[in-house]
Amino acid sequence: MAASMVNGTALTTPIEVSFPLPRAPQTNAHLQLTDNRTCLVIFLTTTTSESSTLASLGSFVYAMPNRSSPSDVFSTPLYTYAGNLDFTTRLAKVLARKAGKPVYVGNSISFASAGMGGTVEEEMEGFRRCVEVVMGLLRVNEKKVDGD
Image 1 (cartoon, rainbow, N blue to C red):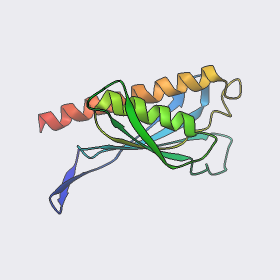
Image 2: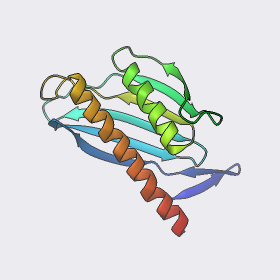
Image 3: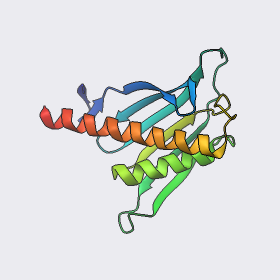
Image 4: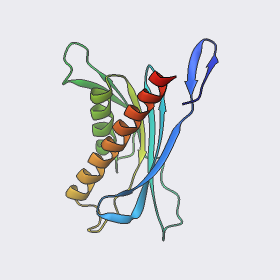
């Protein structure tokens, strides 16, 4: 991971990956992760091979772990879009709890092109996949930083 210093603060290069959503192989999720050591910044969106329309801005949520009660995570929406606010809030809370640091999540993922049009099951599988990918990237990133 490349890092530079600006005013004494480490800035890291964002990690960008793309992966197919479960039950929607024609839909790719695009993820950008920036680990600033003190917090994570994550942006998510989707694209399909047949769609040429731009995604909406989506929701932007801040979540931070509660040091006195690790299972309870604080969160607040910074920008809301009713279509995905719940998904974004849940994702931010889970990632803050698992990573143990504050997380900003911007999300405009759409499950409309999933096999059954975005059922709860499809959304939950996509949610699990997003958590797996982010936590996997963090593990790889930590190994790179420890190896420096």
